[in-house]
Length: 609
Image (cartoon, helix red, strand yellow):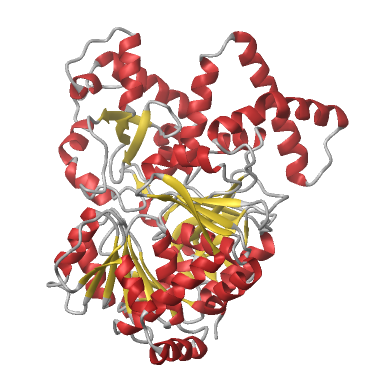
């Protein structure tokens, strides 16, 4: 019997009726608790129901919903049957969901809200292997189709199962082995069709061991808020770390309500993408700019002391001088605790962050005020983490040391190669794509560029496929520029352009609310958003702010021209992946006219040209 089949019964025996997860009840809009015992009970019912519905050993079932307890219950129920959960992002379109169901050969799909259920039901007649839809939202109307059932009815199937079904589930659990496929996770893909990454139980066992070697959570006091979707390997892997260490989790259902959830839950730990912390940094700076002069001076002094104490001493495992420590404790009480409390993380102590680059100055600021941001790097194909900051000795500008048992080296064209027990088995149904990235000796080609410093820490520079070469032969790293400009409060999204062009340009989606506030303050009149983004004064203001972020860059790296767009890049338009990464090919094609115009002689030039 493998470890993840044993995990829940072991933890239920250890913790019993203690809270295991917390979630927002959709009927009452109140936080509700579920104990380890109750989850174990529901997993047993769900496992029996899956068996009754014909799920076979290593059979697949899709989970198409926002974060909710049923996601995790269905996962562990699948493990009991030696089944394989297949996640579909809640924001996926009909065609994306259809592709994943057909490619995986799933027989059951668990669907969340009204839109997801509508898509799932439509797939019953277009996906040959799909037999049943289980609806998860408690407030949805019943469906007359016998192939569609509610979560309650699904669990009832398990409750009513006889001894024969129970024996079969027990036999499957006992026969499970580490080489069984545990998850099939489809990459969102910035180019081409998504690929199903095959992760085995042994992959996850190795990942749990490595993370528990480096991360020590407290099951008595820690609580993690699940903010990223469970369909993302980062959140899924982190949640499994919490399960393994007996830590409570709180599940955020609606991503748009994350600020409310953080304040209500007060998590001590939470994995997130850099954009969350960029917004925190912007909000703090805005409040500071509007504060009274005396308060501004106090906060700036506090940050300076925090920087000295946390980065020059604590980071390196050194004891701070007594004077610095006393000052820090004063500012901890008067400034930092209140600042973290305003965010909702007064007791926060561990915040893994990955998925994109976070600027060095934001990382430094967060650590200065006592927010322990742990920068890391990984991919779905490596079962999330390749590397991340250790408690001591980490360096800003790196993504930390490789995790135990994982080997990293730099290959041709500075590509990062990874080898170890966490690396995927391959891409499902795609032997050629697997062979293209996975060498016979197990080295995986990440497609990312980087280097390893003298201390052995990994430095991530750019996606290999994203590197631009201008017509002048200069290489440009667009993500570096996008990260730098994305810090600005007036800039919500950036797409850097420049491949094969004579200089770098950008498509910029402003933060429209900030831009409206600026226009009101400056008494700029406009009829609509399009008129606002085309206003010359607005354009000049953004230009000046861009120049401030790139003043230390070489001339050929700097954005020379840009366009402000009147609408955001979206997943619905195909411009973003489900993990909010830019699909450059789509953007280049969709905005070709605007892009070409930025390279025309008569385009509005920047003043320094």
